[in-house]
Image (tube, rainbow, N blue to C red; front, side, top):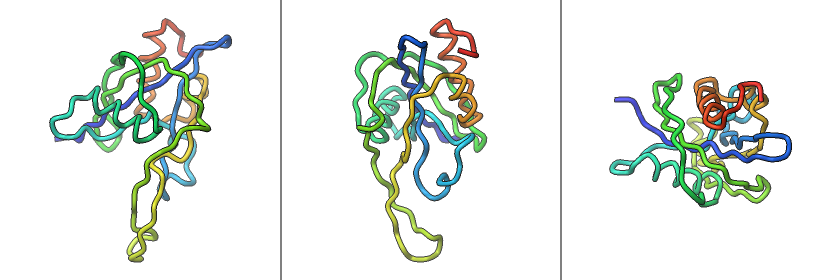
Length: 157
């Protein structure tokens, strides 16, 4: 059975249109990757946990903030490795400079016996949809299209 994750595409509206908040995963695997690496805050759904609760928990862990208000369903995508991601959207303004991610431990370099700590998320940025589409994990791009449809935007907004 495929692993399931849940996440949230945060967005805000300003005088110039809509922006979405994307995160860049931390750790050595993602360190030198940019295009195709940015994604929504997301993580594994725990046994007995519903997808909305998991999505809220993951945002709290990866960004250090609680979401305020109802989540709007965006649908589900399957990532290249087979993982299913159930996604939601919410309009909420956040200052990326104030966000704090939880840390994880990893043996690095591999087989060195040395454990190092890395943030789950090492960068957070608000982007216009056209910019987000250019740098997002390809399998999550349909979530951006779903948000644009939900908000009545064209894909080039």
